[in-house]
Length: 343
Ligand SMILES: *Cc1c(COP(=O)(O)O)cnc(C)c1O
Ligand code: SF4
Image 1 (spheres, rainbow, N blue to C red):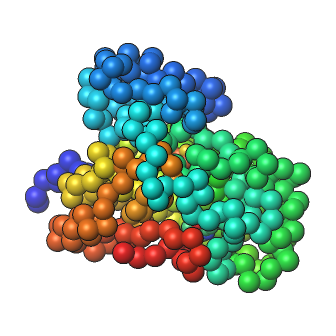
Image 2: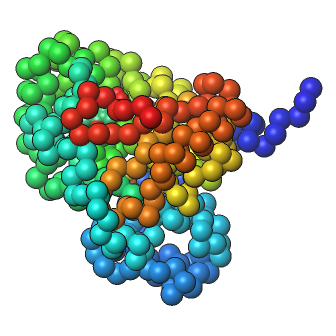
């Protein structure tokens, strides 16, 4: 037998450390002060090119467990770069707008966005456990535009009225930032709609706050009347640790299909090595790669953008190196298209 390389080890066998606290408490303990974050990592504020103005546009929020996975003393740490508000975000770059993906135009009802055939996306909440600097929703009006308002009634009615919708996608924000009972209220109502065949959940929580995957959530998932696709959003192999592996293993045991969607970002994962390790590490945790996204061109994220030419070269490198099922599809979202556009 050939000994397995570290990245190929199966990662869901590790027993979990007992959660230190219920997830809501860990949620509240997230770091909101970028200076304290830097100090904790032994980093110098001036060298980090920290920006209070960027932080005011979109506040800092990083769960403590995610900080633990960052390397100390490394300003280029791929996890840190995803959350630190820096001066680069203030650059006004032509082509980078406030509603890059046309969400405003695709609104079907409060909190319901439909762009593609058969699939309705619910903006369930504006809250997230982590604030990702690259987020295309950093300028979205969440306060008024989430489907949970009024006990989901308007959103559920819009879906019930359209027999063409067979898949409901819970998105946000992060849908798992809602309590499980609030989510169950929604799925109980959706269960009355006969034309729904699949449920999809997009959440970064199993990765950034794995304690969210508790017995109550698992019980809810296992009891849903539809097959469930669960898309985690991990951008780098270092986002996985034993506790994340355990949470993902429990999600699989509850019967959900785990997929990963990543955003291609300069300085985070723009190398064949980083992308290959991400796919291998995700698979070891029971997750198949789904999409690799070209970043949505919203104001404040231009410094993360990777050119299409370079993105295609990276994909070629990945195909040369990985099993076919570990190669994600490189796509871009273009307002008005009938689906994500392959590059
Ligand atoms: C991305 C997206 C979807 C899902 O597209 P898939 O290609 O099925 O993953 C659905 N609705 C909206 C509004 C989206 O932005
Ligand atoms: S919606 Fe997703 S990408 Fe955006 S801040 Fe929340 S977790 Fe991050």
